[in-house]
Image (tube, rainbow, N blue to C red; front, side, top):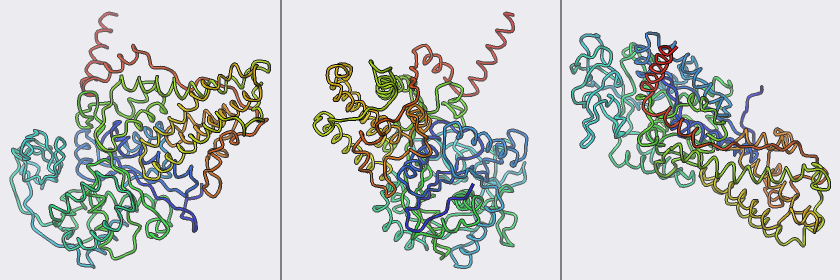
Length: 601
């Protein structure tokens, strides 16, 4: 398949999702926080006719991988191979439309990362300093941040499993030497403090370049408020030199004689992964990454990752003195919480990507629920009863009901329907109800485009669903089932307009539920690859404001079928019980149940 490359004269959109860490299975909070949100936006841009490249992959270097490898008794490479495959399978099930889903443990990552480092070194943006770091006498090694755990020193937190780089509970970035009662994660002994030399990125010296970039970008780029807040907090605190090396084996080697036994800090090299994964996709990667005049970069992530993308990564690229495609827009989510607590990879709490598949709830329902519940401005809550309500009330009773009523009526034999043939609409101009609907739908489409352009995905989805509600109200008010006998011309207008709305909904909802849209187009007897667009070739969306023109008279539709199934109370209760507690507790319950069953036999 030919690589997607920027095209002169078209809008070229480069979309990245925060690279999911490879040491565990992604949970639903991870999925909505980065890959699914980015996917909805990338799909929307393609729908508008933009030229889009969506890049993602697993973040594979660093301490967390080494730690997981120790836990599972294998090499870091084996851990990465195992979990990359798991991530890939989960995202494929969720219909995530990456152009490439790569990985950071590639030769291209080493090449690009080292080239950027050498430019920073050449331009004098790096300094050397001696750090106090925890040293484990038992393991005979300096301990990287994530190889240490202890009590969080932040006042009011006191979390007992804070890592040496960040506290999972309060989110505060830490130094391992600040932890109270630290312990080595490898052997459990108490480490001592020792001196070790490291390289630092001189953020204070780069501040002027960075602030100029931020000031020029964040308003025009419509940065989400949480991204602006987190960035300003870092700038207000005052930028400090940031250590970019670590005493590890698993990572990109530092190309410097004095530091050849060290590797780059994962937060220095991970964002460079966007570039290196693009380089794995095409040797012409610079046409995307060194082309700010013709490429717009949109980045999606959870709030934990903001400073690394708005401060560290742009400072790194600016420091090279080369022309890079810097981020235009950053879209950041807060936390999706689970029932009464937080999703947690480390504790195994919540619903994970492979769990979603095991529920037998279709991917389009999961996508809809997560996107309609996207934590854009504040934390949101996943509950099984809310999932049930949204599936039954919004997807089944609103959207599915509207589409099925329209297509089923058209599919009825002549005498009771139209024999699956789209009728003509002879009294269109004088049909006030239809003209009023078209005016309302036209305004909603403008609002949808405005919301989606500004990456307000939840709002865009809500507006698209409002069009479905308008369609249901239109059917009710028209009383089409009576019109069929009493006023055939009026009924034909209503049904031709309604089937146009069905098509329009398939288009508008494709970024959110692609498999739903594909099924609708099949029921309309239209090819998804050829017909999925509510704009013309120039991006004009005027045709969408005339729903009666979207599918021609005389077109034969396919066979209608229900699009959604309801979620029953018993099923939801069973799922809530099944996924209660941690993964370890669930595993124990399963083992106990299996033993009891074996005993009974």
